[in-house]
Length: 225
Figure 1 (cartoon, rainbow, N blue to C red):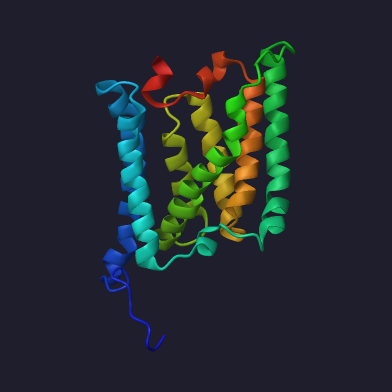
Figure 2 (cartoon, rainbow, N blue to C red):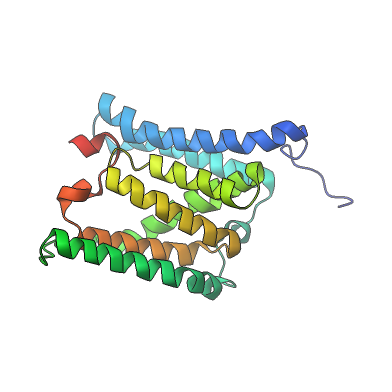
């Protein structure tokens, strides 16, 4: 477009321009893994220290958005396609909730003894943040490198699953959920709708599945403690 200056990222060689998004994804995922594993092992439960790698990842994402000229609407913080995204999410979310409740019913012999916790009130905000990282950033960067479709969705799902190791059940669930949310995002990018779906599934897990199976939804080194 005439008269519009290119950003620094748009001036990169074509090959580097395609590979850079993969390095951005790797950097963000690595920062999260450092927070989940290395920081906890070597420093302990100090939340301020654990926030350092997450803060660095967030800074990278915000810088990348700015350099690429991405708006809040571009990444999915919008309302115009909210109902479209909700319609796409309704069936898989309902199916996931039914399957989780059924699994919880049989494994707990019908005794859903998990207590309500007030921290669940903040779950939609936490889900929105996770969906921003997962789809507003990683999905978009995966599409830049691999194009829309199965390859970028698979990369997204694997990254999401890896971040929920070493819990085998949680890793499997997030692999499927990540692929589903990634598929919907590529057709109707709306982080608010995705956060509602994420909240519904997470809350159902927390209230119906025994800690024996999910170990309190712990991931990283905390899974063992």
